[in-house]
Image 1 (cartoon, rainbow, N blue to C red):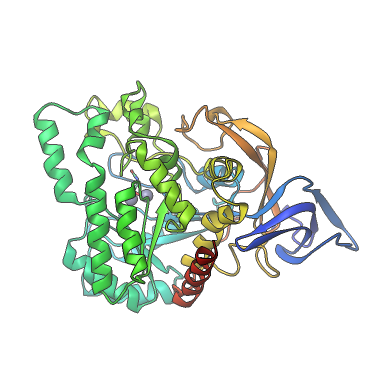
Image 2 (image 1 turned 90 degrees about the vertical axis):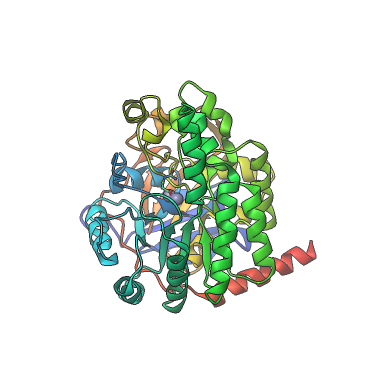
Length: 483
Ligand code: URP
Ligand code: ZN
Ligand code: ZN
């Protein structure tokens, strides 16, 4: 660990320490990268660096379980690699990312992409990281490989797509769900009905309608909600295979997930800041190409429906889906036809601040709920608990300190990604992440990156733990009944 004094003690004093189940005014001691004591006015002997967190919140570091760093999507490669992507995340208060691997060459096996991604991240990531497996076809070999991906490689979640080039058909989705349940993995899904997109898109193109708004018209929310309902039913048929819906963008899809959850089905839901803070009117802007992603931005009435899910507990996590293609590249590729624009947008550095400002500071959610959706539940769902996702004794000292008194105006000029724009440009946030610590080391301070490429460690994740999540559901319904 060249250049780092890992034996150094750090004492965070006078902050409000917030966990998913409560908060307290206390000091927090870090020794060798772990939380070793929490209490009022801790006295510490020897060499200790004191960090004054008076008036600030001390949160578990954010966990962003949906990024796409260094992804090759065929028509382009994203501009953030594991260095610039994790640097941006760290400066925004995130201390762990789980990246969705991109598709590999036709016919490749699951381990192929894992090796590619290990090579891409090693020596570059500045914070801890892991990967979701990617399923681009199903056959006996792939089904067999899933077991060793979980038990030997620590990859305990996989994503399959219902649209794009390597979409799975229903029979393969069912086989994947069954096998992933069996091997202790969480299935994550990009839900959009591909056949519907094809019909709608072909009609638009035939009519010469290829502007950015036509991207949204080719994939309306029913396209996504129908796929959410369909895959939930397949997961039920697969023996209640645990299912995680990524980047949910609308209230109808959320209602289908709610119905399943009420029936006791293990279904989990992620949404992203872009669906909470942006809407489809962005496709009428001059710079509309900045907002091409799938699912697309929705009519703004969907935003409050998603917020209601965050408040009532039916949305579990906030990911970013950070997939950064510069605006300049989008202009160059698109040439008047939305089908040619690479899909995705950046956001890893903005997630924590936006959710804190719009969620906590605007009184929509408590500081504890903020912790739950940005850190605790991601850790529990994706096999990183109890090392990550809270600040209890023995946990990794992954911490973000937020000053609620400071405000800032989001500007790409101050961000740390490798792109050329921020979709949230100009938004004013109340509350600023003033310091981020990864395993006790300060990786960002007052908007400056202070970490090191390669300091992040690969997290070998544990199998999906139904018991852990059942406990969460149980305490959630008790809280709900009491309110
Ligand atoms: O448009 C998006 N969201 N691109 C990233 C890949 C995905 O679908 O998550
Ligand atoms: Zn997706
Ligand atoms: Zn994605």
